Length: 447
Image 1 (cartoon, one colour):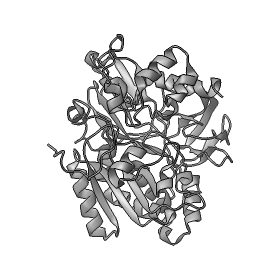
Image 2 (cartoon, rainbow, N blue to C red):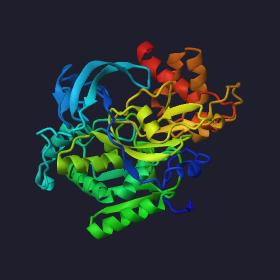
Image 3 (cartoon, rainbow, N blue to C red):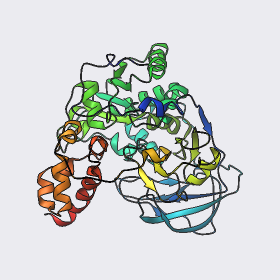
């Protein structure tokens, strides 16, 4: 058990503690990261990040090596895509993402030879490189945020002119129920985590490193603290945070760990902080030390599967292969969710590839399915838990009535889509979904 009193003196406004959070995480919190052998066929979408999609650099019939860049863009905000196995390009064709959008993708047949591309070279003296050189290596490695947003890491580590970042904040919160791959990564890759944080601090020119971890992960807090002491990492510490969703949001985490408030519409660097997910930080170490690009990630498969696991999987692996590796679905599984239950996407099929921003697959039972809506009872719970202090019940009404100007005025564009309002609503209103609809319609229809 954890103590809710063991946290920093700050707490972000709103939020709540999801029921059964500890029970659902217990399904895999003790399951070690297990590498999954690459599949015979992988599908690699060219859009796996925020920003411009990559343009294919290969064509049908080409032979590619492991780690070879197969798609890239010259746009400032983008990230290249690499071959995650060696083999032959079967096709370059549209592939359906979980959102229902079809995007150009490379279909790659694995030759199981694991032939690395000649460009993959180690760099044991990465500390001696300039920040610009390190950023370029990260950009070439295709790194993006692995907590879900998939924002290119090289762009995040490039502090705008006139601003400074004095603090690097490592996000080890993993506040979504069920998911534990970040937790396991902190336990099993602690040295790589600290190394990546030190290298990222060099790039930023930051003084402080803070590891934000919720107190329901006491083992992770201990191993990180011990590693900081043993390695003599200066100006680094662990912030123990109360268990509260959505503490993993950047602005909420920054306030909880530092007391700094990021203004609406501003980036974290405006208050001197840059946030990296723990898995992203570990990948920073791997890329800068070994030259290995972003080709695999930790991934939780849990819920109503026969053998819940934390896996290390190659990008492009189909979700159906992950379910098979976990013994298949249990008979009472009624819904599949990619990501966490709060912010994830419901799936209609498993023929969907793992991408850079994927963190988990959850099979839910009938008791966890979404119930029917009923009229709003004006209880105000949604407003109390909203970390952005929005009146989501008003936004819900405006969007349903297609009053998008009113929805914009009510702050719909500030919604972080955390799902807290929907979770606590006794009428089971689909408040978050209406906010999502509003955020997509406002730019199209409101000047």
